[in-house]
Image (cartoon, rainbow, N blue to C red; front, side, top):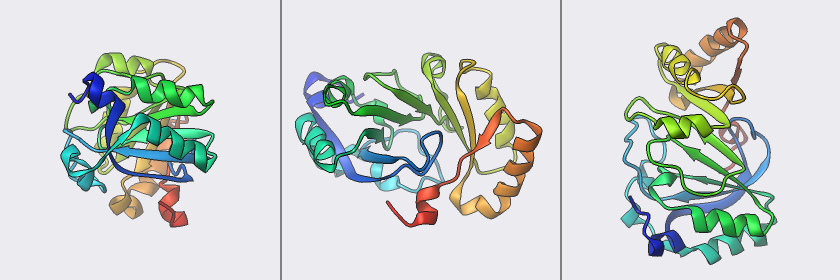
Length: 206
């Protein structure tokens, strides 16, 4: 864990930018993304494998991150990775919320939750199990569908989240032509689920 007091105030940041949220419940909304370095989940199809090594990226202070979000005029900040919960996020989220910026996290749920969140997007992976306490607090469950067996995996996690949690199925980008028709059929048969697309890739924005 990278969650010492010093690490909480200086975070490994692979990239940060103002864009459009491409996935899940906030799809299409303006959002400032902060992609933190470090991940120990190891998804074979990950499209940001360069984020895995936290030491490969420069650190930024909480103050500098918040100033970048404020200067952009963003109403919402999404903390992602990598796996952002490798870091202690209490200081960052508190500072953002003091500036009236909503805080969202995208996490695999493999590490204890830190930070104060307006929205928690849980995206569990087969490669490492999600912690039950993170499942219980999720506002959104987003399952990446790489293979047809992922529908069963999705239902296993849907049974672990709360009744108000929103459920999304998202085709893995390289398999979208094969998986999207299956997802459409599945959602029609199981309407508690919705489809999430990587809209930012279709729009060609970061």
